[in-house]
Length: 91
Image 1 (cartoon, rainbow, N blue to C red):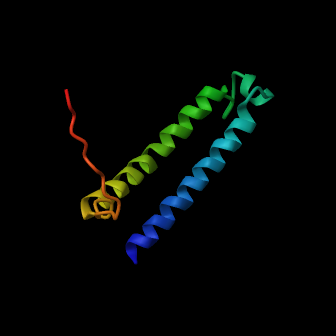
Image 2: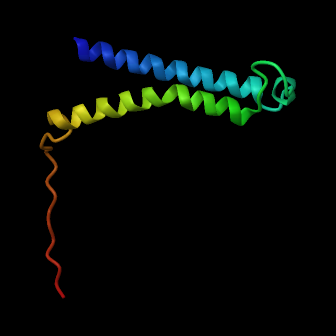
């Protein structure tokens, strides 16, 4: 049950990160706010994307850890029904 909650939480956080990315793009992409040099949060688009990436780094790590846990528990290592025929190389 705890694993299911963490999956849902990671999914919701990724959706929020994508919404924030779109908001930053709409707000800072060649608008008046992105060309002012004083005050907060007046910065160009690359500055806003840098802050977005800085906030998303822990989420990337959490997602990476979740997929590593899947690999370690053997979920992705289950044998499949598809058999691969090995061919011998004749030289």
